[in-house]
Image 1 (cartoon, rainbow, N blue to C red):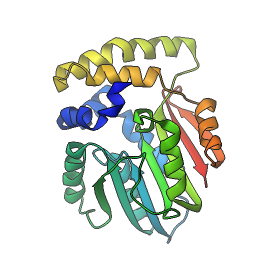
Image 2 (cartoon, one colour):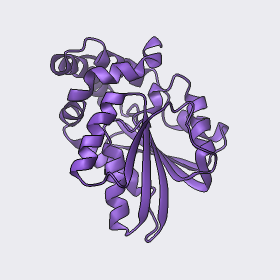
Image 3 (cartoon, rainbow, N blue to C red):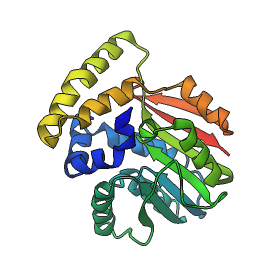
Image 4 (tube, rainbow, N blue to C red):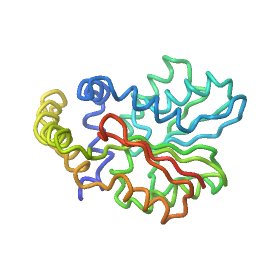
Length: 237
């Protein structure tokens, strides 16, 4: 899809309304999704974590990661990469307000060419970003490369509900309600139509796990949440 090759500029256009629409369109459940996702990988107390958040956007997942690491009395550094400079500018403002700028940093970079050495990170995360990769496997290979042996990967991504009734409501919402509300508030005709297409055309569940295993990850698992609307994937290098 051509949109994926211009994903940075697409998110630049809607950055000012992105957080508002995320919370509105998910009825604030997106906050719970991030909390559950991070809990699946933060296990150790008093540990020194080096973390990479791929497609960091406005920083919500990185902030949740920092919150839980603080509760575990861990020392940590979180580096976030993204192709949208405007999304990251908003994220940096949020991080400064929370006085987390010493722990969370932002860098303009592609997930398909991560500018860090191999075996660098204890944790690599990505929330609602992998479906935007122009090459899924190339991005997964890069995330595998930068993880330390034994390091953990966590991906949070939209999926398709198995229940036929829920799936019908979900598809109705994603096909008509979400694009209309998104266009109204963001004033962008294409961005939320793209979101609908990107979710419908993406792999999920076992197929996503197969991609993770094929690029070298072990202990691959997935956990659908909220009727399968979204899924947490975890894996180990």
